[in-house]
Amino acid sequence: MKSDPQVTDAVLYERDPRGVITLTMNRPANFNSLSEEMLAALQAALDRVKADEGARAVIIAGAGKAFCPGHNLKEMSDNPSLEYYQTLFDACSRVMLSIMKLPVPVIARVHGIATAAGCQLVAQCDLAVAATEAKFAVSGVSYGLFCATPSVPLLRNVAPKHAMEMLVTGEFISAQQAMERGLVNRVVPADQLDAEVEKLVTSILEKPQAALAMGKDVVYRHREMGIEAAYQLAGQTMAVNMMDSCAQEGFKAFTEKRKPAWKP
Image (cartoon, rainbow, N blue to C red; front, side):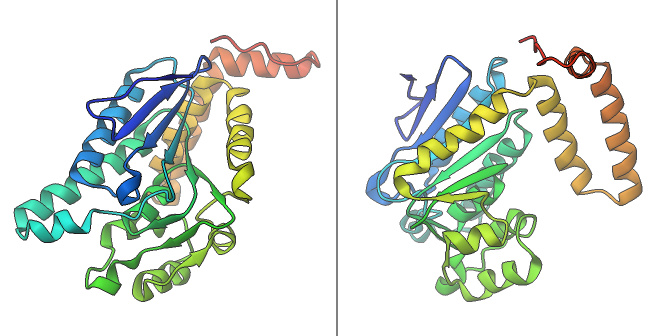
């Protein structure tokens, strides 16, 4: 696996021969907080993934003892201006939307803590695998700042009353609770975290790239629509998908009782 740091080494960019890209937030001294530097590096890395036609999946991880504690509070307290805060939260929102708009599945590999915008990052990823000892919170309210932007993906993953409890109390939930509430997909002991992520990656790589790209796009688009418009969009997407060679090969393989031979 080759390491190719971006503008800074705040995010390590690794791409294996299969097209699986690992983005590792690399500021363990501050638990990988979403500083200005970190947000810029994440955005650069995500833009690079978007331009890579051979990309098949993305893993977002954190170096050191934690996944991500959210924004860098020292930076925020040192820059008390509305313009600064608007620019900072706009940059964070752009990163989150970039994850959603990538045509490949994005998996959060979570250990230690994921709080505030760090919890937002987990919620925004398409899939998430957590270590048993991982903990999650949207804790801004404990410091006088309601986690409004983290609430956007949180409410799209977690039932409203569970999400609201997290938002108004700032209290931590365990990895097991996070899985039960829909914030993460799987929970395993820390020494099995990479293996469990690899299971998801392997399953993804067995599926045709074009179908996954169309599917991810339509899922996020119809989630925001009324049901009639959602069915119209979904039906049109399936019709277009059926015309793609991957679906034609898949159905032919099924009728011929053989394994599909996907083309790159």
